[in-house]
Each structure stands twice: as structure tokens, then as C-alpha cells.
Image (tube, rainbow, N blue to C red; front, side, top):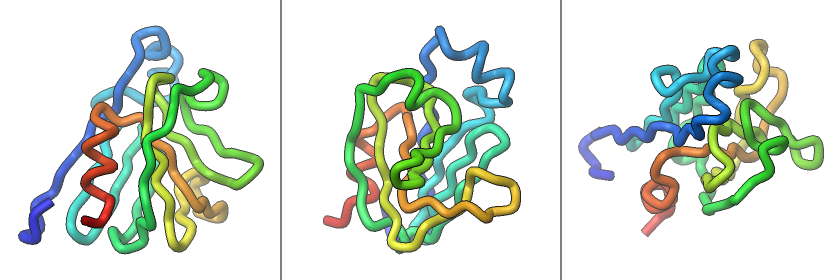
Length: 132
């Protein structure tokens, strides 16, 4: 990530067997993207959106593989209120926030301390958000 405001984006890794179900929810490759700039993290997942200042990202770890019931679609953990935007069971990235973010409900009432995303290049995302 350069210091000149350059943005980087990541598509989501879609498993073919889940595409029909996800498409019904408006979740398709053309409606899902994670964008990272020097100032902002923006995750569009069909009709859902998470926005956070870049400085609010406390860390990132690779995670997976996952159970389909725990990752496919939009999921919220009842244990810790973590949010998941999932399109693949193979691998993803868990992004932790200093201050919880909204993104699962239209009014922004629920706040999430972490967001798991199944982007197409998880290792690169971890590298981009982890301080050197």
C-alpha cells in the first residue's frame, strides 16, 4: 500500500455450489468487493456495507477452512457478535477492530468487533492490513 492514496481492492472467492443461493440475496461477484485505501476500509457484500477508518483495523489473521453453515452468506456469531461475509469454505481473513463497526442491519444498531471475509487473496489482504 503506497502512501499516495492508492486504493487496493479484493474480490470474493465464490464456490460454484453456493452461487445460486447467494445470488438470491444479491450477493454476486459484481456486488462484492473489499476496498482498502490509506484512510478507509470499505466492504460491499451485496446489499450489506461495512465502512471503517483504516486506523480502526487492529489486526488480521488467516482463518478457515469453515463449515458452510457458519460462513456462507451473512452470519453473526452469537458468542462474540463477529460478522461474516462468506462465499467460500476454504479460507478467509478475520479483521479485528479497535472500535466495533456496523454492517449487518440497515439501522446500524448492531456493532461488530470483527469481520471475517472470504476474499480471493486472503494472504495479500493480511499483508496489506498488518503493520510492518
